[in-house]
Figure 1 (cartoon, each protein chain N blue to C red):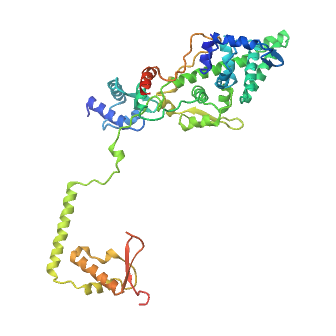
Figure 2: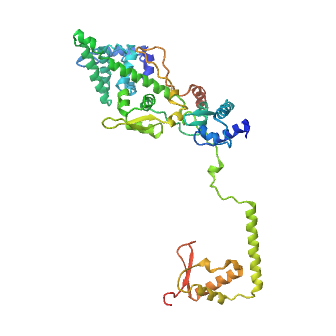
Figure 3: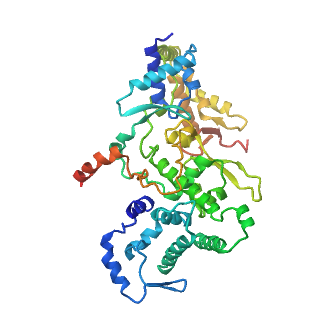
Length: 202
Length: 288
C-alpha cells in the first residue's frame, strides 16, 4: 500500500499526463488497492493546495479533475503565439447565455428573447466549439431542434455544473444608476500589467 | 446619466456631452432638421444628437429592436412597467428613420417592432368600457416582459463573457509522454542477444565443417539440382533455391550455378519491380 505522499505523486503524474479531465473513477483505477472515495477526495484537495501559488492549478470540472494554467499568466503565454484568440460577438454570447440559462431551447425561443433572427453561423460556431448540441426535438410542426449546453462548455469555463453559472440578475423595472458590471475587454489583472509591457514592446 | 447609459448599452457610442451643444444650436437655426411622420422636426432632440460619422457605428452596435428599445428606456430612466408609449414610440421611430436615411440595412425586425409599438400605443388611446378595462391586461405587459427577459439575458451574456475561457484565458497542460510520442517496438532483452549470437556462431561452425567435408563443390552438380527443382515448369522463389543452413560455400556455389544456368539460357529469372520477390523458372518450360 502506498503512503499518502506517494499516492499523491501518482495522482499528480496521472493528472499531468492526461489529455482530458480524469474522473474520480478513473483516478481510483490508478491504485491496486481501492483507496476509497473519501481518501481520494482528500488527497486531491491536498494536491490542489500544494499547487497554490504556481502558474498551474488543479481544478475540479464537470468531466473530472484537470491541471490548467492560471488565467493571470495568459498574457505571457500569448506572446508565444502570434494571434490572440478572437472574442465572440454579442450575438454569439447572448445566444449562448439563452441556451445556458433557459435550456433546452429551440432557435425560435432564442429569437423570441433576442427579438432578432438567429443566424445559422451563430449556432454552428457554438456547435463547432462543442459548447452546445441538439438534445431532442420539440413536438410541434417543423420539429425544431432543442439545444442545450454540453459538458465541454462547463469544462471550458471552469465550471462543475450549470448551478455554478453566474446567477441571473433580478432586473429592476427602473434604471439603477449604480454602474452595472461592464464587460471588460481583459481581466483587470492582465490589463494592468499588460499595458506598460505593450508600450515597451512598441 | 446619459453617458452612463450610453456606455452601458453601446460602448462605441460617443458620449452626448455638453461639447455638442454649439453644434446642436447651429443645426437648429436651419428651417427644419428632418420630417418625421409628416411632422417637421425643427431641432435635433437633445438626447438624440450623435456626430454623423459615428452614427453608423453607433446604430450598428444594437443587437436588434429590443436592444434599441432598452437603450432608449434606460437612457431616459423610464419605468419599464409603465412605459410612456407615445414618447417611446416617437423616439424609436426617429432612430429607425435615421437608420433608413443613412441607408443602413434595416432588418425587418425593426419595422415589426415599430408596428407593435404603434399598435400598443393606439390600443391605449382607444377608450374602453370600464368593465372590459379591468379584465384586460395592460397592453404593454407583454412588451415589458420581453424587454426584461432580454435584458436579463444580455447581462448574463456579459457575465459569461467575463468568465475565464479555455484557450482564451487559460490553457490545459501538455506534458510530453514518451509512450505517446514513440512507436512502441518489441522489447529485446540481453538473453535474446546472447541467443542470437550463439546461433550465429553455430552457423559459422557448420560452414567450416562443410568446407572440410567437401574439398570441392561442383557448380554443375548444383546446376542440375536446380534444374531438377524447377522441373515441371513452375516458378520457384529465388531464395528457396538456397540452402542457407549448409553454409556459405553452398550458398555461393548455388548462386554460381544459377548464374551459369542463366548464361546458358536454361532458366529465366524475373522480378516485377525492385525489391519484389525474384522468381526462377525453366526457360523452355512450355516446349518441354
